[in-house]
Image: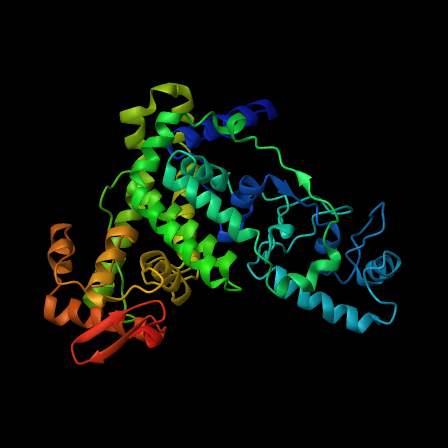
Length: 450
């Protein structure tokens, strides 16, 4: 697409792209991490945010001040330390060396997701900052990477009774006493939160009730699973509860991207870590298929439903290689960051489906009741039916994979060893036990219940 000739044309192009994203997907796909989604969702959930200026200045250390700055650069320790002392945020006994060590700890704790590296306040230019939040008091409103994805998910959840129950459970979870990590940065938090203004409708157009209800119906199995996840999290009250909630919601969003144009998407998990060449090849193929379908989904949407977009608007979008690349980057980044896809390195182009330990634990919390026990075969079926992940542990997997064109895969030589490796992973995570040869049972507290 030719470079716009004026600021007005750039604005109109960006507005047209946002409109297309809103109509086709529901939000703007970006290079998004779960921490970015968390900002958007928690803003929509609570309607509150904080500036977090002191936290940003303390957790983003700089060695030297910004050149030619007109105001004091408080990101430099020599300027920030006396200010925090004067405000009563730090003891006068803390020496400069200890303060630098403290800042390194703050950065490690609240920039754990690598999303708050840039100074967000003067004399530096404002930029996106999303903190690894142990509580909602760490939610700011400076993110530029979430594309209002959380606000979109909130609107879809509000369109069904089950989704509304999920929202209420989310509110109950964030109201629980925060984990100990919240205490570390508490002196740097704002005393009062500000009201958040939801501008989703102005940016993307109103998500009408019929469309929201259709998406809610499409995602009903995943929404029910979210309800079970939150029920378990509220009962156990883990220090990781907020993080697990966000992983569950991001898993919902990732499956939504696949199900929009494919009612029965399937990702073949490689549980053998590449030891079986056919499994690795077909796992890569299953990921590549879903990536391609998501990339082409806008064209299919345009042909079927895109009458509200003018030919000129669509031409500007369709001819933009950057817009196309953004779709692929968004699908890949979210799949990797949520823990569905590997390897994580951006330079690794040939990716495959491989579930990460924390993600599998979250999905188990969404599939199993508190005291529920089931065979590994039934668990594998639920994982496939709800979260679109096939491990080969269910006997019908071979036929389902063959029907979708993932061949050659042999039941005995390929899928059975892969399913066994998946079973072993569940056992290592404490989500399954093998009480006798040939019998593996899954439960959230397998060692206690079985």
